[in-house]
Image (cartoon, rainbow, N blue to C red; front, side, top):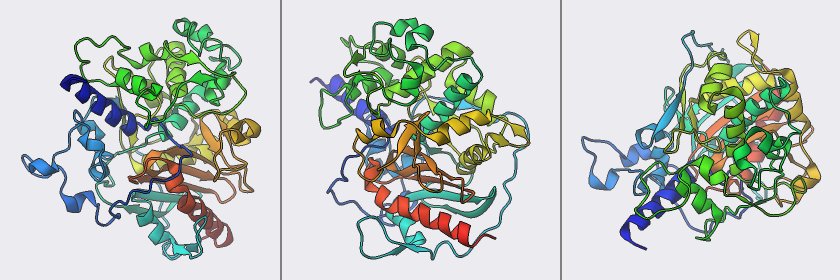
Length: 445
């Protein structure tokens, strides 16, 4: 492999990781030992401070250094400085202020992580999961809010595969409005995909990720299709002699079938890329533009969001969104209220109802998520089917939107856990969120 190909390989790895290509995998946590949250604090380490910063504290996209831990902890709050993006405008209206009723009893809340014998406190869980920012809404009021490391109140943070759930809401909205027929084939909307594995898949199968695709996201295998996807989406110039696809759209046309559509759940980022293409074809706007028009500019957001793009300017629907913490909380609160927020029905209630009912639990079980037994996947949301009716958006390194209807609670967390797969933090995250929900149900204020 020549020098140019080595650079491209490193960049492809960095880009694919940064945009959360393998969102919520079931792999076991790595045995590698990482510095803890305090030791890896990006502000204390001084990443990108100075004019110029010291050579050993410079973070670059082109060489992949921006996604090596602990530099990752700075990068997730500064993607716009490192790669091309497209804006998601909040519009020109005044932001909707979220009322505050802060509680002092949450930090001391105790719970026992899955598989552990000793309890930990909520405050301890934040460090355990390398939390960068977290906000809890109860009945629409902020009851808890914390920021750590490089994330500030006026900053944006990478949402990783939480992006998929946001795009899923856009797709489900167009279905509810009759602009997309979920029973039609993908090729009915994007004829360019007729010869690919997606051609005879239905839009519903794409939304619920029950497509049969020859696509591996095994990063240990250099021949896995995830590498070709990352290379295609990489916005940097391709090396001389490169003959592969040069954009997300070009790559999607090369995906081959494997298995039968509709038989089992398989979490594959390229499903969301296809949904983004369908949305763009039907609406005449890319997903960043439509997200601004239909949601961000209507919900009283306090900041613009943004999305990473490929070399043709196509937003990465599978994981490219960065947004403010409270704005993501506004998005979650809108869903908790059946699509209503800022005095208006922003998305149809039937979209939220469809998400909450969940998908095919038998199809989901075949994917083998040991900590997510009984869950399902619908409209690119993870549905718990627990007694509270909770559902969640999940992204690598610890990103979450968690909505608990019974507890009237929304939790949004940004994090920079050194291990990408959510199996590394679920054992703490799931019981921690459940403990807060129980507190809010039993001791409302």
